[in-house]
Image (cartoon, rainbow, N blue to C red; front, top):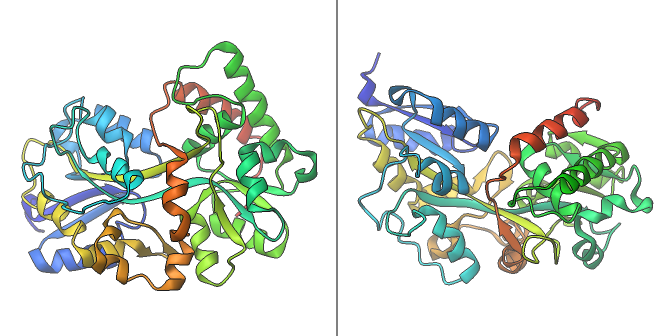
Length: 355
């Protein structure tokens, strides 16, 4: 068995655990990498907060707000002494704003690296619903009688909570009053009662769109639509609502932050791994994983951008991505998440999950 300091332990969203990403680092440094996939940002963050220090993983990959607003203030994230670990120059204001999540709240400490990102709202069959209608109506499409049993729901709980709130004209990132909580419950019940397909498998929803079983699905985005689009089904399109209750915004954009956690014996491989992730060749590997195409912030580097074919750029809707991001609120922590998840699960437990 290798010594502990010859093992790097990672907890991450799917993709970063792929041998395509990990094997070149393992060969370069002659180090073992053990990766565990997470399924919920909130669950992972609270588990880490409650762990003994020596039980923490070395590297955590998680959605943005949990690093800057929760884990770092709780003293769980290493400060990176090399502030130039990611020197990507982001000319776009919208994308540069996403990169701010790699810094502490006072912007004085570098606490991670930002990489994969994407708008995550709803996905339509553009041959059935116009882009203009979908952007104008947003999540309220689910309340229209014309779409009864004509839509699906991707069961990603964190995003379901965001989107149900937005559909009910509620800002999910502010504490809810009793009236708003009731509106959330009513909207959630209606969503799931009126849906034709409920699943945690975005490939099933893309197939249902293409086959004409549904006209749109809720809680999806560039990431989930890309496998269908790369196969030539360009009628499958991720949509960002044009307006909403979050200071006028009606969509959500996420960016993943990869950080090094504080442990009694910090791994000597943690910072080299973060440096490795933002190398152009690695960023390209991260962008093309498991049949999906994902935008990465390192695409501002011409070497990374040039690795995308025109079909792959079309798959991630690159021509409108900056505009779509600008119409989104950033993924954030929901103050009433535990309460809203309890309401959501009481409803979803009554429905059979499709595969």
